[in-house]
Length: 369
Image (tube, rainbow, N blue to C red; front, side, top):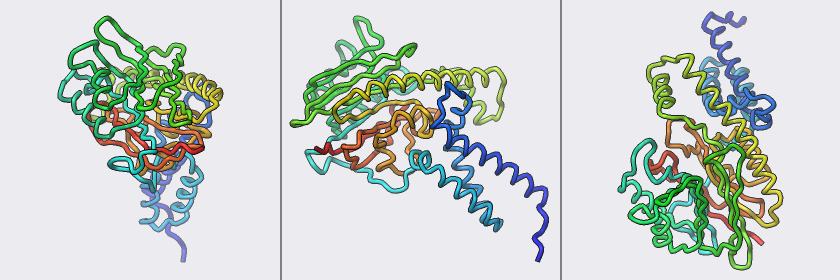
């Protein structure tokens, strides 16, 4: 029996499917290609989660149409990209809700607190207090803050509050901006004694940098890197335009071009910043953790290279898409915890607290001999 000739609809769907497959492949390749060599590939890495979902929908469509060859070939292609797939979507993991099950485990947490206030809003004391209550409840042994904010005195003397509620006298704070009244920057708080500390600066990376501390856990030394890679630096007009496109489908040339340029510049800067981080991490002679706001998705060059040869905590124990960003764009995973191979990842949890424009992320770890 002859198969019916493809209809016009079939031909249109196949053309769309081909475009989605090409986008998926380019997204899979993005993590291995430096944007400084081919800058446009980075946009496909950013869009990889979307291409992944759309191709899965195409598989369902092919199955409903009984086009088994198309369904099978699309499935195989997705599985060929196992590395970006498992970094983007977790199938089976342990969330580790509640308190630690063993006092010897290390509870690691990272949180971009956006100055302890909601994105784009003024300081709201109840929101700040909710953030502090959340941190107190999670009770991390080590916590990395990006966009950390504190004042010298008053209710927004966050440093004093954290030292009190967490009973952690050890901390390292490096301001990127400060005056006699207040300061903002990167901070690490630890219940373990800090034996060494330092700052890693990025060229042309104002507001984005890295700090590290070496902490003594029993008789073992552990390094913790707190990283804030290049932000896209969208402002209010950019977010308003994204809302316009999302809800009204009214794209315009100039704002679209502006956003594309901002994304491209961020991709390029993050590539250079990852080079700086990798060079520094290669000199570290102890086990280490790198955590923070990488400002890019799991299939990107920046994230793939940063976590290369490391254990990505989400990949080890995460489930679902691992959304860590509470803003409008990008809307998937951009906050990470990764460790050297000698550290076991017991669980991974994203805390769904819509307070900052990021969700806090934490993981319980074991530092092996």
